[in-house]
Image (cartoon, rainbow, N blue to C red; front, side, top):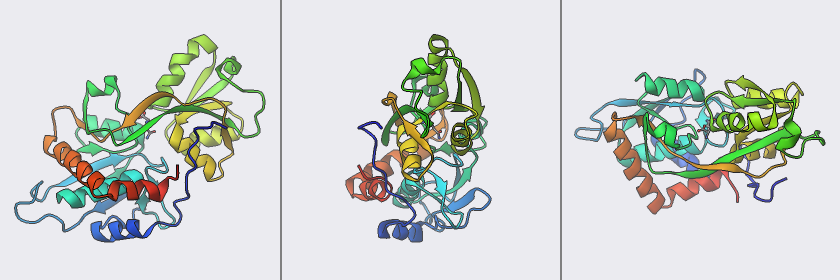
Length: 274
Ligand code: GLN
C-alpha cells in the first residue's frame, strides 16, 4: 500500500457543520432520481443570478466527492462545496447526477450550466471548457484485486485486461501505457461497475483517481494499490467555454470566501483525514 495513501474517514456520520450547511442550503432534498434542489429561496431581488436556477451536472458515484447517502441524498465534498458557495453568493442550483462522461456531454450541449464532478483541469479540456480556480489536488493510480499477488507494476499487465471509466483521466493514462505494456482495455460508465469487474476477476487492474480509490478501499472494497500516484492534476468547476461567465465568477468568489472563513477546510475534514 502506498505511503501516500490518504486515510479517509467514513462519511456515514456527517459532522455538525455539514448538517448545518444542508439545513441552510436545502441540499438535503431526497434525490432518488439523481436530482437535488440546492439553496432554495436564497435568491431575492437583485441577487446574483436574478432568480435563475443553474443546472449543475455531476457523476453518479465518486465518493468522497459525490455519492448518495442512505436516504438517497447526494452528499460529498463537491456537493458540500457547491452548496456553501451557492449560499455565499446567493444563487440557486439543481444537481443532475448523470455520470462523468454524460455530465461533460450535457455541459458541451448546453443541457447543463456547470459541472462539478472531481473533474481534472487539463490542457485538452481547457480548449472546450472554462475552469474555476483549482479546489483539490489529485492524480491517477492503478488498483488491483486485494487478493492479487502477481501484479506489482505496469510490466505485469502484459496480456491482461484493464478496466477504466469512460472519458476520465484514468482512461487517458491507461491508453498512454497500453502500447508499451500490451494490455486490453474494457470501459465502464461508473466507478462502482469498474471496481466490481476487477474484484470479480474479469479484468486484472483499473485506473482511478487516488483519493477516490483510497476512500473506496477504506470503505471495504476488495482492491489495493501497488503503484504510486501519477498524472497529478487538480479538480475544478467547469462551464462551457465562453458561457456562464457570471456563474464561474460566483464560484471563484465563493470558493475564495469559504476558504477564508474556514468552511472549505471543515468540509474537507468531514470527509477526509490526512
Ligand atoms: N478526475 C478524473 C477526470 O477528470 C475523474 C473524474 C470522475 O471520474 N468523476 O477525468
